[in-house]
Length: 313
Ligand SMILES: Nc1nc2c(ncn2[C@@H]2O[C@H](COP(=O)(O)OP(=O)(O)O)[C@@H](O)[C@H]2O)c(=O)[nH]1
Ligand SMILES: [Mg+2]
Image 1 (cartoon, rainbow, N blue to C red):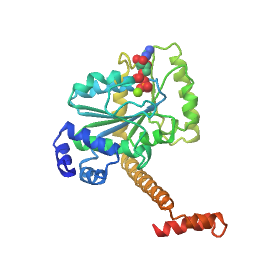
Image 2 (image 1 turned 120 degrees about the vertical axis):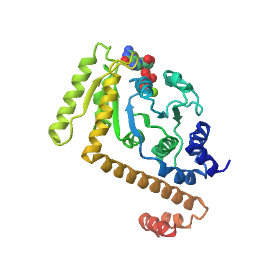
Image 3 (image 1 turned 30 degrees about the horizontal axis):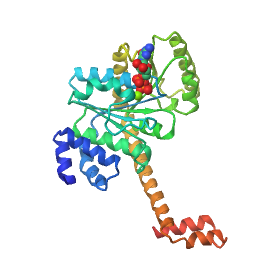
Image 4 (image 1 turned 90 degrees about the vertical axis):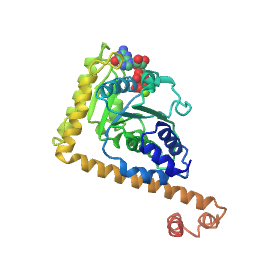
């Protein structure tokens, strides 16, 4: 099937075409750029939500419950789950995704796990493209699930309009999230496992941490803190409300446009930077090591050498 046929089928709502497009994105298939350029104009209307937080906090469980609520409103939902730590085969239903199994049979729900591949555009690149493919397919909501520890995960999450940071009690999560710089990007804090004996403590801990941040920057809106239970669904309706409220307030204040412009810009920069880096590597590997030889012999300094390579490219 050529790229054109594939994108047409995806746009008409063909699930298998969507699955194949995402595989192509993941495999860095040479057709990917053409496919994306066909699809891009059909994206931009979905509610996009990023879920991040340490493994085991309950993100997948919460997402499964949220999907149920969106399905009650007959909304089409897409989920891109980025989990580099679990090396499962593409599209397989394994590990923590078990809770999402119920939704795999629903044709209005499309869940896709992405591994750690997709170096084009960094870790964030492939999953963002997968999200775009889902939007073009017609999902009303796209949810990104990432483990909020590394830079790549933060990048994925911050591409979403609303970022939910999911923490669990008794794990010192708040302190760690703060250290990792994840707290700053969160719009909504979700203390999951509210049945845990230290749940209230965790909430207080997050609140006091946020208050310190708020004192430093009083203009920034204070994020909501919500207690949930991923296993029973308690609090998930409130979480959904807060997500929708947040999106509405972004739209009203004009902040949505600002965010989307910034995130698109960041995407272009990181994609281009990645591509450039690959080209430089290629250039140096092509056997033409004369330039590096000159650097080694101190005839040419490294900065001038990189400028030279840059010009050549
Ligand atoms: N006690 C309790 N367990 C939960 C709750 N939410 C999720 N879990 C359990 O926590 C574990 C990790 O959940 P999961 O959704 O896979 O976390 P993720 O790694 O953040 O996606 C699973 O065994 C869940 O059943 C909750 O509110 N209370
Ligand atoms: Mg998970």
